[in-house]
Amino acid sequence: MIYDRILLTGAAGLLGTELRKRLAPRVKFLRSTDIASMTDAAPNEEQVQADLGDLNAAKELVRDIDAIVHFGGISKDADYEIIHRVNIIGFQSLYEAARIAGVKRIVFSSSVHAIGFYDQTQTIDASVPTRPDSNYGVAKAFGENLAQLFWDKHGLETVSLRIGSSEPKPSTRRHLMTWLSFDDMWQLVERSLTVPRVGHTIVYGASNNRASFWDNRLAAHLGYHPKDSADDYTDEIFAADPHPNREDIVNRLQGGMFAK
Ligand SMILES: NC(=O)c1ccc[n+]([C@@H]2O[C@H](COP(=O)([O-])OP(=O)(O)OC[C@H]3O[C@@H](n4cnc5c(N)ncnc54)[C@H](O)[C@@H]3O)[C@@H](O)[C@H]2O)c1
Image 1 (cartoon, rainbow, N blue to C red):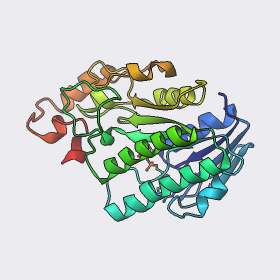
Image 2 (image 1 turned 135 degrees about the vertical axis):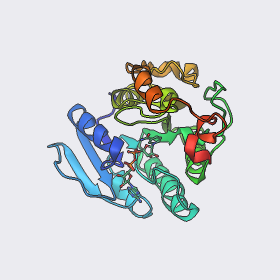
Image 3 (image 1 turned 60 degrees about the vertical axis):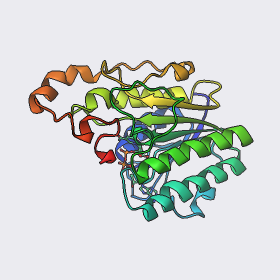
Image 4 (image 1 turned 90 degrees about the horizontal axis):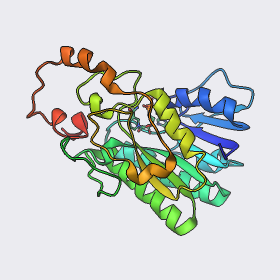
Protein backbone atom coordinates (compact mmCIF):
# COMPACT_ATOMS: atom_id res chain seq x y z
CA MET A 1 0.00 0.00 0.00
CA ILE A 2 1.24 3.50 -0.77
CA TYR A 3 -0.28 5.10 2.33
CA ASP A 4 1.05 4.70 5.86
CA ARG A 5 -1.32 6.64 8.04
CA ILE A 6 -4.93 5.60 7.63
CA LEU A 7 -8.22 6.76 9.16
CA LEU A 8 -10.89 4.03 9.19
CA THR A 9 -14.45 5.18 9.89
CA GLY A 10 -17.22 2.74 10.83
CA ALA A 11 -14.49 0.69 12.51
CA ALA A 12 -16.89 -1.05 14.93
CA GLY A 13 -19.28 -2.13 12.16
CA LEU A 14 -19.62 -5.39 10.24
CA LEU A 15 -17.20 -4.44 7.47
CA GLY A 16 -15.14 -2.07 9.62
CA THR A 17 -14.29 -4.90 12.01
CA GLU A 18 -13.00 -6.95 9.06
CA LEU A 19 -11.00 -3.98 7.79
CA ARG A 20 -9.49 -3.09 11.17
CA LYS A 21 -7.87 -6.47 11.60
CA ARG A 22 -6.55 -6.48 8.00
CA LEU A 23 -5.36 -2.87 7.91
CA ALA A 24 -3.55 -2.71 11.27
CA PRO A 25 -0.73 -5.17 10.39
CA ARG A 26 -0.12 -3.47 7.03
CA VAL A 27 0.17 0.22 7.92
CA LYS A 28 2.37 2.34 10.16
CA PHE A 29 -0.56 4.01 11.93
CA LEU A 30 -4.29 3.28 11.98
CA ARG A 31 -6.84 5.61 13.53
CA SER A 32 -10.10 3.69 13.96
CA THR A 33 -13.24 5.65 14.65
CA ASP A 34 -16.89 4.90 15.26
CA ILE A 35 -19.78 6.26 17.32
CA ALA A 36 -19.77 2.87 19.04
CA SER A 37 -16.97 1.76 21.33
CA MET A 38 -14.19 -0.62 20.28
CA THR A 39 -11.77 -2.83 22.16
CA ASP A 40 -8.51 -4.73 21.50
CA ALA A 41 -6.53 -1.91 19.94
CA ALA A 42 -3.50 -3.05 17.92
CA PRO A 43 -0.14 -1.54 19.04
CA ASN A 44 -0.18 0.93 16.11
CA GLU A 45 -3.90 1.71 16.40
CA GLU A 46 -5.60 4.71 17.99
CA GLN A 47 -9.31 4.31 18.71
CA VAL A 48 -11.52 7.40 18.73
CA GLN A 49 -15.21 7.36 19.60
CA ALA A 50 -16.84 10.16 17.61
CA ASP A 51 -20.08 11.12 15.85
CA LEU A 52 -19.60 11.74 12.12
CA GLY A 53 -22.60 14.07 12.30
CA ASP A 54 -20.66 16.31 14.72
CA LEU A 55 -19.12 18.91 12.45
CA ASN A 56 -16.20 19.55 14.79
CA ALA A 57 -15.17 15.90 14.92
CA ALA A 58 -13.84 15.62 11.36
CA LYS A 59 -10.98 18.08 11.82
CA GLU A 60 -9.45 16.04 14.66
CA LEU A 61 -10.09 12.71 12.95
CA VAL A 62 -8.12 13.59 9.81
CA ARG A 63 -5.08 15.09 11.60
CA ASP A 64 -1.81 13.61 10.16
CA ILE A 65 -3.71 11.16 7.97
CA ASP A 66 -2.68 10.18 4.40
CA ALA A 67 -5.80 8.24 3.34
CA ILE A 68 -9.28 7.55 4.66
CA VAL A 69 -11.24 4.31 4.42
CA HIS A 70 -14.72 5.69 4.96
CA PHE A 71 -17.12 2.94 6.03
CA GLY A 72 -18.97 4.79 8.81
CA GLY A 73 -22.49 6.18 8.90
CA ILE A 74 -26.07 5.04 8.49
CA SER A 75 -25.89 1.74 6.61
CA LYS A 76 -29.56 1.19 5.80
CA ASP A 77 -32.54 3.27 4.77
CA ALA A 78 -33.85 5.72 7.38
CA ASP A 79 -35.70 9.00 7.77
CA TYR A 80 -34.22 11.74 5.66
CA GLU A 81 -33.27 13.84 8.75
CA ILE A 82 -30.83 11.27 10.09
CA ILE A 83 -29.46 10.35 6.65
CA HIS A 84 -29.01 14.05 5.96
CA ARG A 85 -27.17 14.73 9.24
CA VAL A 86 -24.72 11.84 9.06
CA ASN A 87 -24.42 10.65 5.42
CA ILE A 88 -24.71 14.03 3.70
CA ILE A 89 -23.65 16.85 6.05
CA GLY A 90 -21.22 14.59 7.95
CA PHE A 91 -19.82 13.28 4.68
CA GLN A 92 -19.26 16.78 3.33
CA SER A 93 -17.52 17.84 6.57
CA LEU A 94 -15.18 14.86 6.35
CA TYR A 95 -14.21 15.72 2.76
CA GLU A 96 -13.69 19.38 3.58
CA ALA A 97 -11.56 18.53 6.62
CA ALA A 98 -9.62 16.00 4.50
CA ARG A 99 -8.95 18.59 1.82
CA ILE A 100 -7.67 21.15 4.33
CA ALA A 101 -5.48 18.54 6.05
CA GLY A 102 -3.94 17.40 2.74
CA VAL A 103 -5.35 13.86 2.77
CA LYS A 104 -4.44 12.22 -0.53
CA ARG A 105 -7.13 9.60 -1.07
CA ILE A 106 -10.48 8.35 0.24
CA VAL A 107 -11.98 4.91 -0.22
CA PHE A 108 -15.73 5.47 0.05
CA SER A 109 -18.23 2.70 0.77
CA SER A 110 -20.92 3.66 -1.73
CA SER A 111 -23.63 1.14 -2.52
CA VAL A 112 -25.77 -0.72 -5.02
CA HIS A 113 -28.56 1.49 -3.70
CA ALA A 114 -27.14 4.46 -5.64
CA ILE A 115 -28.24 2.58 -8.77
CA GLY A 116 -30.93 0.34 -7.25
CA PHE A 117 -33.71 1.21 -9.71
CA TYR A 118 -31.99 -0.47 -12.63
CA ASP A 119 -33.60 -3.73 -13.60
CA GLN A 120 -31.82 -6.97 -12.77
CA THR A 121 -31.90 -7.85 -16.49
CA GLN A 122 -29.75 -4.79 -17.37
CA THR A 123 -25.97 -4.98 -17.37
CA ILE A 124 -24.59 -1.61 -16.31
CA ASP A 125 -21.15 -0.08 -15.95
CA ALA A 126 -19.97 2.90 -13.93
CA SER A 127 -20.92 5.41 -16.65
CA VAL A 128 -24.69 5.06 -16.21
CA PRO A 129 -26.61 7.83 -14.40
CA THR A 130 -27.37 7.04 -10.76
CA ARG A 131 -30.90 5.76 -10.00
CA PRO A 132 -31.14 5.74 -6.19
CA ASP A 133 -33.77 3.51 -4.61
CA SER A 134 -34.10 5.18 -1.16
CA ASN A 135 -33.00 8.13 1.02
CA TYR A 136 -29.94 6.03 1.79
CA GLY A 137 -29.27 5.60 -1.95
CA VAL A 138 -29.66 9.33 -2.59
CA ALA A 139 -26.98 10.02 0.02
CA LYS A 140 -24.64 7.49 -1.62
CA ALA A 141 -25.21 9.17 -5.00
CA PHE A 142 -24.51 12.53 -3.33
CA GLY A 143 -21.30 11.06 -1.91
CA GLU A 144 -20.12 9.93 -5.32
CA ASN A 145 -20.86 13.38 -6.77
CA LEU A 146 -19.03 15.12 -3.95
CA ALA A 147 -16.07 12.80 -4.49
CA GLN A 148 -16.06 13.77 -8.17
CA LEU A 149 -16.13 17.48 -7.26
CA PHE A 150 -13.23 17.11 -4.82
CA TRP A 151 -11.19 15.28 -7.47
CA ASP A 152 -11.96 17.75 -10.26
CA LYS A 153 -11.54 20.88 -8.17
CA HIS A 154 -9.04 19.92 -5.46
CA GLY A 155 -7.19 16.81 -6.70
CA LEU A 156 -8.36 14.71 -3.75
CA GLU A 157 -8.69 11.16 -5.08
CA THR A 158 -11.53 8.75 -4.26
CA VAL A 159 -12.42 5.20 -5.08
CA SER A 160 -16.18 4.82 -4.68
CA LEU A 161 -16.99 1.17 -4.00
CA ARG A 162 -20.56 0.42 -5.06
CA ILE A 163 -20.82 -2.48 -2.63
CA GLY A 164 -23.49 -5.07 -3.38
CA SER A 165 -24.15 -7.38 -0.40
CA SER A 166 -21.10 -7.95 1.78
CA GLU A 167 -21.99 -10.60 4.30
CA PRO A 168 -20.34 -13.79 5.55
CA LYS A 169 -22.25 -15.80 2.93
CA PRO A 170 -24.95 -15.20 0.31
CA SER A 171 -28.44 -16.20 1.40
CA THR A 172 -30.95 -14.90 -1.19
CA ARG A 173 -31.56 -15.17 -4.94
CA ARG A 174 -30.44 -11.56 -5.32
CA HIS A 175 -27.20 -12.29 -3.50
CA LEU A 176 -26.31 -14.66 -6.36
CA MET A 177 -25.77 -11.42 -8.30
CA THR A 178 -24.68 -8.98 -5.59
CA TRP A 179 -22.67 -10.92 -3.00
CA LEU A 180 -19.20 -9.62 -2.06
CA SER A 181 -17.15 -11.88 0.20
CA PHE A 182 -15.13 -10.27 2.99
CA ASP A 183 -11.87 -11.36 1.30
CA ASP A 184 -12.92 -9.74 -1.98
CA MET A 185 -14.10 -6.63 -0.09
CA TRP A 186 -10.63 -6.43 1.44
CA GLN A 187 -9.01 -6.92 -1.97
CA LEU A 188 -11.00 -3.92 -3.25
CA VAL A 189 -9.87 -1.72 -0.36
CA GLU A 190 -6.27 -2.90 -0.66
CA ARG A 191 -6.21 -2.25 -4.43
CA SER A 192 -7.81 1.17 -3.86
CA LEU A 193 -4.94 2.09 -1.51
CA THR A 194 -2.22 0.64 -3.77
CA VAL A 195 -2.83 1.76 -7.36
CA PRO A 196 -0.77 4.94 -7.99
CA ARG A 197 -3.47 7.00 -9.70
CA VAL A 198 -7.24 6.58 -9.35
CA GLY A 199 -8.72 10.08 -9.83
CA HIS A 200 -12.33 9.35 -8.96
CA THR A 201 -12.96 5.73 -9.81
CA ILE A 202 -16.31 4.01 -9.34
CA VAL A 203 -16.12 0.23 -9.03
CA TYR A 204 -18.87 -2.32 -8.38
CA GLY A 205 -18.22 -4.36 -5.27
CA ALA A 206 -19.21 -7.91 -6.10
CA SER A 207 -17.43 -11.25 -6.03
CA ASN A 208 -16.97 -13.34 -9.17
CA ASN A 209 -20.69 -14.13 -9.47
CA ARG A 210 -21.79 -15.62 -12.80
CA ALA A 211 -25.21 -13.89 -12.60
CA SER A 212 -23.76 -10.43 -11.90
CA PHE A 213 -25.35 -7.47 -13.67
CA TRP A 214 -22.26 -5.28 -13.29
CA ASP A 215 -19.46 -4.55 -15.73
CA ASN A 216 -16.24 -3.32 -14.09
CA ARG A 217 -14.19 -2.69 -17.22
CA LEU A 218 -14.07 1.08 -16.51
CA ALA A 219 -12.28 0.27 -13.24
CA ALA A 220 -9.84 -2.23 -14.78
CA HIS A 221 -6.89 -0.06 -13.67
CA LEU A 222 -7.59 -1.09 -10.07
CA GLY A 223 -6.56 -4.65 -10.93
CA TYR A 224 -9.42 -6.10 -8.89
CA HIS A 225 -9.78 -9.84 -9.49
CA PRO A 226 -12.37 -11.34 -7.14
CA LYS A 227 -11.54 -14.82 -5.87
CA ASP A 228 -14.85 -15.91 -4.37
CA SER A 229 -18.23 -16.56 -5.97
CA ALA A 230 -21.86 -16.76 -4.84
CA ASP A 231 -22.21 -19.56 -7.43
CA ASP A 232 -20.90 -22.01 -4.83
CA TYR A 233 -24.12 -21.44 -2.83
CA THR A 234 -26.60 -21.77 -5.71
CA ASP A 235 -28.06 -25.16 -4.70
CA GLU A 236 -28.58 -24.06 -1.11
CA ILE A 237 -30.27 -20.80 -2.16
CA PHE A 238 -32.51 -22.41 -4.80
CA ALA A 239 -33.63 -25.03 -2.28
CA ALA A 240 -34.57 -22.35 0.25
CA ASP A 241 -36.47 -20.27 -2.36
CA PRO A 242 -37.57 -22.60 -5.20
CA HIS A 243 -40.30 -20.40 -6.72
CA PRO A 244 -39.43 -16.67 -6.47
CA ASN A 245 -42.20 -14.25 -7.42
CA ARG A 246 -40.85 -12.51 -10.55
CA GLU A 247 -43.39 -9.69 -10.20
CA ASP A 248 -42.01 -8.72 -6.81
CA ILE A 249 -39.65 -5.71 -6.96
CA VAL A 250 -37.23 -7.60 -4.73
CA ASN A 251 -36.72 -10.04 -7.60
CA ARG A 252 -36.85 -7.44 -10.38
CA LEU A 253 -34.69 -4.47 -9.38
CA GLN A 254 -31.00 -4.34 -8.57
CA GLY A 255 -31.69 -2.63 -5.24
CA GLY A 256 -34.10 -5.37 -4.15
CA MET A 257 -36.00 -4.62 -0.94
CA PHE A 258 -34.79 -0.98 -0.74
CA ALA A 259 -36.74 -0.16 -3.91
CA LYS A 260 -40.08 -1.15 -2.34
N1 LIG B 1 -22.54 -4.66 4.21
C1 LIG B 1 -23.05 -4.39 3.01
O1 LIG B 1 -23.57 -5.27 2.32
C2 LIG B 1 -22.98 -3.01 2.41
C3 LIG B 1 -23.52 -2.80 1.14
C4 LIG B 1 -23.41 -1.54 0.56
C5 LIG B 1 -22.79 -0.51 1.24
N2 LIG B 1 -22.31 -0.73 2.50
C6 LIG B 1 -21.69 0.40 3.19
O2 LIG B 1 -20.51 -0.02 3.84
C7 LIG B 1 -20.35 0.68 5.07
C8 LIG B 1 -20.21 -0.33 6.20
O3 LIG B 1 -21.35 -1.16 6.21
P1 LIG B 1 -21.61 -2.25 7.34
O4 LIG B 1 -22.39 -3.34 6.71
O5 LIG B 1 -20.33 -2.56 8.02
O6 LIG B 1 -22.60 -1.43 8.28
P2 LIG B 1 -22.57 -1.27 9.88
O7 LIG B 1 -23.86 -0.63 10.24
O8 LIG B 1 -22.23 -2.57 10.53
O9 LIG B 1 -21.37 -0.25 10.10
C9 LIG B 1 -21.53 1.13 10.04
C10 LIG B 1 -20.83 1.72 11.24
O10 LIG B 1 -21.03 3.13 11.22
C11 LIG B 1 -21.22 3.55 12.56
N3 LIG B 1 -21.99 4.80 12.60
C12 LIG B 1 -23.32 4.99 12.41
N4 LIG B 1 -23.66 6.25 12.62
C13 LIG B 1 -22.51 6.90 12.95
C14 LIG B 1 -22.22 8.23 13.31
N5 LIG B 1 -23.18 9.18 13.39
N6 LIG B 1 -20.94 8.55 13.60
C15 LIG B 1 -19.96 7.62 13.56
N7 LIG B 1 -20.18 6.32 13.25
C16 LIG B 1 -21.45 5.98 12.94
C17 LIG B 1 -22.00 2.43 13.23
O11 LIG B 1 -21.84 2.46 14.65
C18 LIG B 1 -21.39 1.20 12.59
O12 LIG B 1 -20.37 0.64 13.37
C19 LIG B 1 -21.55 1.60 5.20
O13 LIG B 1 -21.22 2.86 4.67
C20 LIG B 1 -22.58 0.96 4.29
O14 LIG B 1 -23.50 1.91 3.79
C21 LIG B 1 -22.40 -1.94 3.10
